Each structure stands twice: as structure tokens, then as C-alpha cells.
Image (cartoon, helix red, strand yellow):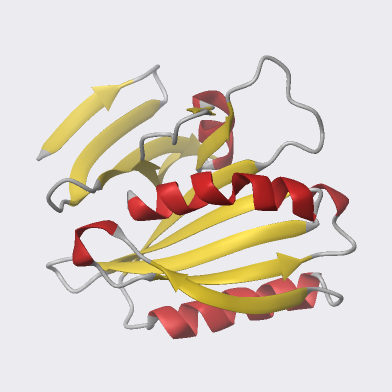
Length: 190
């Protein structure tokens, strides 16, 4: 299924049902947005239902090329967690494990004091391979001092694949622990 949506003069969304599985799936939307040089640039967005007690912040998400989920509260403090989903389309033959190693290498270079701990895999809906989950501890990034980060690959019929990265980030471990159920619900819906 492909739908073309117009939202303002500079944004065109082509919605492709890419994550189709019975009952538990999300759509991946290909969005075209103006970028420097007066050209259109593509980015991919996971359209997921927020878990109970959470809401999607479409304005923040669109500005950062992610799907952004926040606790449904009238006022959020600086310690509030943020769950975001980032999707990338890969035409190469890079495995999920290679992608994870590459991402973690880049992060360790920018955050030399980071500690990355593998955690048990998290199940996905529709019998898909599980997410690979890690706990990142980032002592020199106080706003994202703790992050649960999950990676999954979503193969496509043409041989390409999406890499889906889901991050639950907060300034303290208590906030990450409190939002874990919502994080796992998001993973189960992808």
C-alpha cells in the first residue's frame, strides 16, 4: 500500500506498509523534505502507536527525523525520559551485527567514557527476529546519561533492509527503569 500525503509545501510523505505482519506491525513512512542546496532528501519514519501513558511529539520528531514519544504529562521536567525510533534504509549487505558494531564504534569515539552493556534480546511482534538491546552509560552527556538502545533489521523483498533503532534516553537510571515497560511495548509493536 502506498499513500502520498501532502503536509505543507516542503514535505511529501509516501507511506509504504513495510512492516506488515498480522496484528503487530508499524508502517515505515518515506518522507521527502527540503534540505540544503534546494534538493529533496529522504528520511524514514516508523509510525507506531504510543504505549499507554505516552504521546507522540510529531513536531519534535519531524525536526529531528525520528518518531518521538514522551510521557503524557502536562509538564515534563529535564529528567523525563524520551523514547525515539530512527529508521534507515540500507541497500548494502551489512548485517545487523556489523551495523551495531559500527554504531557503537562511532559512539565510543565521540564518548570515550561510555560503557555499553549487552542485555537480553527483546521480542518483536509477528514472530520476527528479536531486537538486540544494550544499556549505554554516558557520563559526559548529562541529558542522555542512560540509554536503552535496541537494534533490529527489517528485510525487504528487493534485498534492501531497514535498520530500526529504538532508544529510551534519560538523565538518570531511575527514569530509564521507570520507562522500561513502555520501551518494551514499543519494541513489541515493531
